[in-house]
Length: 539
Image 1 (cartoon, one colour):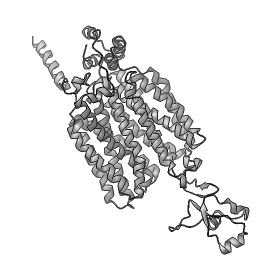
Image 2 (cartoon, helix red, strand yellow; image 1 turned 180 degrees about the vertical axis):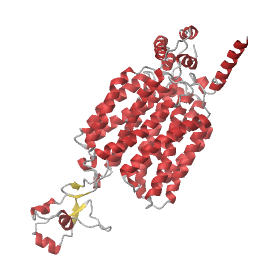
Image 3 (tube, helix red, strand yellow; image 1 turned 30 degrees about the vertical axis):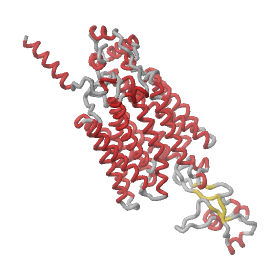
Image 4 (cartoon, one colour; image 1 turned 135 degrees about the vertical axis):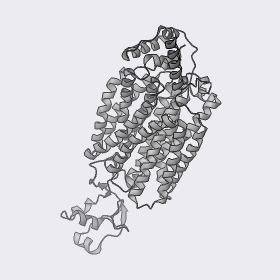
């Protein structure tokens, strides 16, 4: 059986075929952040107070200010209570003005929501305030749970179905249930639809990177992960613009669904991974795809390589059991996954608090999105210059330390906190890109999707824990930052125990992944070829 790295060099390891595939698979990642970041805007609290229109039946000419003064108690900070009102009475307006009202109760007739920032959010539509206020955190957790389930369903559980179907099905689900979300008549339907959107988000994110990576050669292999991450950052910045002009959360869902529908039309033309087909013993199907890729790249495959493709090799079955059966691969997986979870916990804790840093929420979201682009571009260069291991250690350790510095800044210093939070998020983004590449390069083809899916599942658990962790600030505002920063520092230390995979071929077997792999660098191969050509010329 021909080495797949040799096959890719014959086909063209980054020709027109790979570029079209990379764009087709990575473009949806421009749209995926819409769903995650939209939680910040869809679930924003615009401010509210109890509905006290009962007093208008006594005097319909009262101004809003007079109505609130007479029917809603004041808080110590000089604002009106948002969850209490005075008990309605049958007095005339003069008696109410003269004696005032003293007995309070919870809001018995609903709430009045302010629309100074948004026309509507799920909080205003479903009255998720006061005793129902914790439901917002529940909605965030349900979405994160959907991403977790999607990473699991479309990762390890579909290893035998291939990468192609695992990218197509999530896109279709995302289109349908993004529209359903916008049409949700109640909060329960909203939760169900967001859970399924989360499933599609997690499933697609895992498999698009795996599929693209397996078609790209050694030198450009990191492009799949980084283009995914860069487009994600651009998508967050674009979302800030969309929500700025579309202040209705339902209309925003339909706007998000439109471009995803376009993706659902072309995703059926994305090819399967030839590397996966060969690993599964489907040689003829793999051969057709390889010849097709070579034709698009205008390359001719030598007959010697085509002959090798006809020689079947034993099929190496994958799955969760195979991943944990190897002590070496098990250690690699646990070390990498811990750091991956830590950086995701930090990332989401910072992202979901975007409205609490003191600056305008649209400006902060725009800054968060735009800073992701240089983060990934710089990390792409550093990966080739310093390697995966060094960059992962550096980003996690420095990122954790920067997040800890937030605790040293006064809480009323909005600009300083925003700068530190943006810097911490910047570094965690870079670390996330490294993990996405590392998980492809550490594990063999038979369990690559399983490892990526399980790793993503674990990180989604961390994402689910971010809303509850942020709620711990009610006990002390330092707790969330202290927890996720410390975990990031530990993750950076564990990265020291991982092997370097820079410029090495993807392992196709467990033996290769455990270290008994071909370790020649690309430069050495090219140098050897150059020497042979030089000798032939002299002769």
